[in-house]
Length: 109
Image (cartoon, rainbow, N blue to C red; front, side, top):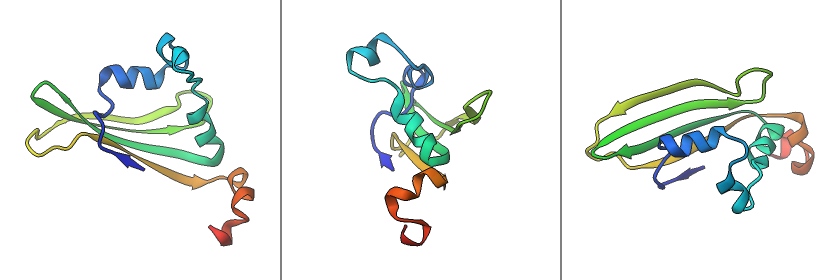
C-alpha cells in the first residue's frame, strides 16, 4: 500500500510510535489498526520519504509483534532532494494463520 502524502517526518514518526496522544483521541483514533495488522501479518515493512525544508530523507523500519521493541531495523538517511517524491509505502509480510479463515484458506489467497 502506498501514498504520496508528506511521509513520516519526525513529528509524524513520533506520533506513530506513541499509542495514545490527545490528537489521536480527539480524532477517534485508538491505535488498534496497527495492532490488527500484527494479528494478521508477522511483520510490516514501512518506507517513507519526507522533506525537511530543502532536504529529503528516507526512513525505513520493520514493525512486528514481539515482547521488546516492536519497531526494528530502523534506518534514516538523507537522500537526493531533487526529484524525490514524498510518501509512504507499507508492505505486509507473512500472513499468519489467524488471517486465513476470512480468506477461505491459503489456496484461495
